[in-house]
Image (cartoon, rainbow, N blue to C red; front, side, top):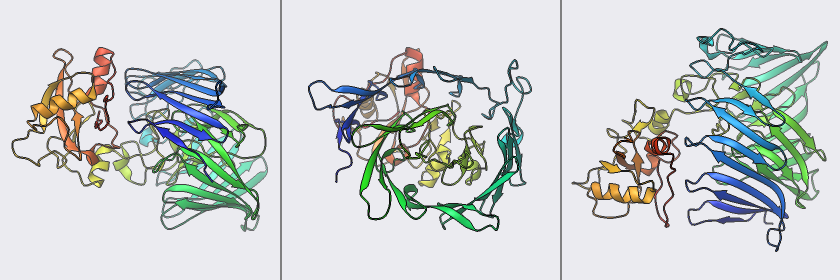
Length: 484
């Protein structure tokens, strides 16, 4: 049976999908940013009925500033100059945050500006106290105790730094939960333990690579997960079976701009689950019209309701502090703060729990010699990713910015003496972050696509937007290669 059908534009962007009796349209601005997701009943009819409507507005730095949701109202987001989120405001939720220089949340109590003044820091990036919660770490930097008003949790880890047991104490009651992993480190079972330590109430998990494919509860009911695209961790649908031999039911996910589920509907277009989020992943509200227990959260995360932690493949994420509770398994290759989830969770994701530094990621792909610029961008001029196929071609040129990707590519091709309008196959032009607003010029570098695609970095286009207030447009015809 067909789960969903997709329609794409000439740039291969999704513009419409079917979800049972619902259809969702996606709309983009001239720079390719998602501006609206409109879900309707009877989209193919003459007068479709609006079911869910989401609209998004951005800053010149591509930060999400405002979200209008037809069921949740208007949400405003505020950022500092480094792109970290500092405040969020909507009808159900108002909060603000302060950070130290390493992007750790500071414990701000009412009437105070920060826990220890403007120069405060979090030693070793390990938060020990935050908004009534208290954390204790072992010698390996793993959280072993979390205390708060709702009780105490004790964590036990194995030699591979995997969480294997949690003891949750509330009053005089202690409940223990265990976790089992396979050889690649994926969690394949969670269960509760009785007074003798024997497991019961099991949930088992099956994986497709590094994506959760299926979960089975108590050996009977099961849920099969389907995702929006190959390689994506954004959920599209869930296929439920109440018991072996019974008929399947398809439930559809409706997600926010960062891929977090906000609604789940059945094949008839009825909402069976919906929720709203605080910025760091806790819920402002959750409602079910029937028991479906929807546990997916940020992309790649699965909520363990017994602890409130989100299982994030290689680590566990705590939405109470917006951080992981153990250090990054790839150490400083993931960045200087081993516990950080992301600069902000609205526009960043980390589905594997392994936030990789872009230069480390490039080295893993075999590209060496890439360096950081003073502004935080990437310079490929001394790397093996730079074009060197034809003598006489200069892969590093200066052009006048046009505000249009295709025109910039053509100007760079001319300046490089390629003697062709189109960019060589397998290569892209990278806008170095040295844009000069006085001359309206900047450097372009011709590099391999594999050294550019999927690598997060700032570039000259962002500087152009900040200086002029104008956003770059996508190529007007098919075949244009896009870069920053």
